[in-house]
Image (cartoon, rainbow, N blue to C red):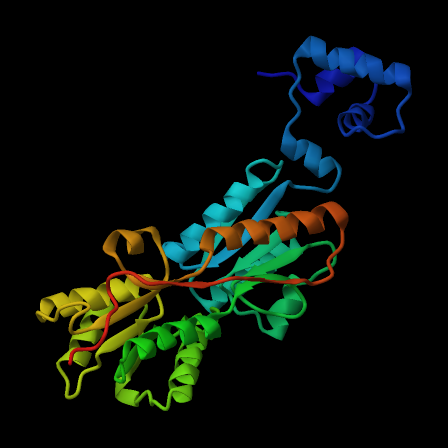
Length: 335
């Protein structure tokens, strides 16, 4: 068993509090006493616990990240960015997965009332005023990624503009029958990115003198399998669309599989656009709207680290750019 802070104190002939002050480089220690303590640490090969040191100065050196549906690829990419930014700091990452409103509220209540973390990052969660008030307790910095609230610093992308870019691309190719495949946030506790992208699509189509009929608008489950089923139903109906805009790359992959099932050639007979630009999108040649998922995680972590180091919690709003990546799943409509 390794040496403890008690062993160091006994060998140096000082109290444990004095050892703690030396470990945390506090000034209220006599120089000769400091030398004795440091010598005792060296003699005992003592390695102080980061947790113990943190607790002695009111820090846990942990960051709590609360995410909805942790297995979604976009969430995983953002977590990779957060972890990458924290990897060179003393802070550990603790992830809390929430899939219901009650679970979200319970996690936030526990984090804000206890001393488990030094700061919180909320990813893809839509905070109402009550939730914001709970998370905004004094001394607990909080940053949002892919969600909005004026009380907090946040890192976002322009989802409305993303929808506009996707629709404009198809209109410029000559498409007039354009469908939208999105998702509905479960119990309205996650951030409604899909709805914002849909709004952008409608705005672009309206500007081009086009409509988006209800039969071309599908808001259901976000998964690939369900997207495949819904797209099949859409394509076998009367006057099927010549293009589909999907709110995620996974849905776009499902839509492409549905076209393959029905013998519909992509993009000769049907164009498909995704959203996110996951690694698999490039492999499949999927046209998509690229949003900087990894970079948003890095930016959110850096905002939180800045608050932790300076104590300045004045909210800032950081908007990251998006980009249409045209690949092989979009082309002119069939003659």
